[in-house]
Amino acid sequence: MNLENVQEDVSGERSPAARAGRSKAAYDEVIHYAGGVASQLPNIVAFKFGGSSLLGADRMLHAAGLVQAAARSSNVAVVVSAMKGVTDHLLSIARALAGGKLAHARHEAELVLDLHLDVLHDLQLAEHDSLRVRHELQLLGRDLLHEVPVHGRVAAGAELFDRLASFGERFSVRLFAAALEKSGVPAVPVTSSEFVLTCDTFRDAEPHLEQTRQRGRDVLLPLLEAGIVPVVTGFIGATPDGRITTLGRNSSDFSGAIVAHVVNADELVIWTDVDGIFTANPSESAEARLLHELSYDEARALAASGAKVLHAKVLPLAAETEMVVWVRNTFNPQARGTRIGSPRVPETSPHGGAA
Image (cartoon, rainbow, N blue to C red; front, side, top):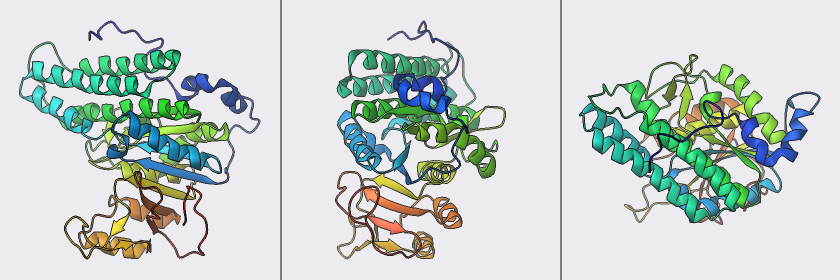
């Protein structure tokens, strides 16, 4: 597919407000909202979906059903990873560029676009929605191909790695927002570089949390106030001068915690492909036991002992803000999962199922 001549209505990625035109009736409430942004919305929950939870149209629609169920009683903000395997393809482009293998780099870029166009086809959206999302994906594909020069060798520095790696989440949010809307949930994709402000340590950037929180509330709260689910890219941010950064490999859990902090979410639910946190790897030990309740200190101790718990930066932020974190299985949502936080009185979880 030749994307060189794909044209965009306006330069750059559109703002969440512009994209919300598909939910204009809801978004008009924000425009006329006298106070601008509410200082606090009730019952906010943040959902983070990993790449395996979003691999293909069926899984996206299943995950959208989880959001739909939670949205009946809560305001929901969503953070998504790239589809499983996509980041590896993107980083292979950087390695191919460094080695002067331009044809391979272009092939990988076209493959990444085709993977997402296939998912779009399988979502079976209404024709006008399909055309709109297809156009957005093609624009991203064009931008990705523009990173591949016609000839020569490219110095594959950390800044280029981050620009390339960011495309996975930027594709993913558009498809998942479309899956939500097909499921009857008003949603809009949000690129986190619009508000996650970081240092310029590419490939392992540190977010400036206070500035990120201030900027993020301006972006996300109007959407939540209007009943629109923001679908936010995990993993990426930007320097003050607008250069794309990433927060480190597998950092989308951390992005979920950042978004939860920004919107004052009561809980962060990390949806993954396991039933929760175990005492050992259940695939390696018959004695592995699922842990239903952990304090912040207990979770930190488990992580320090080598157990796969969460991204290392999630727990400090959760403890500092007294954010409750759940680890639950996208494919087994009836399972209770693992709750990390301060002790509490048993009650019904706002994101569905027994708490």
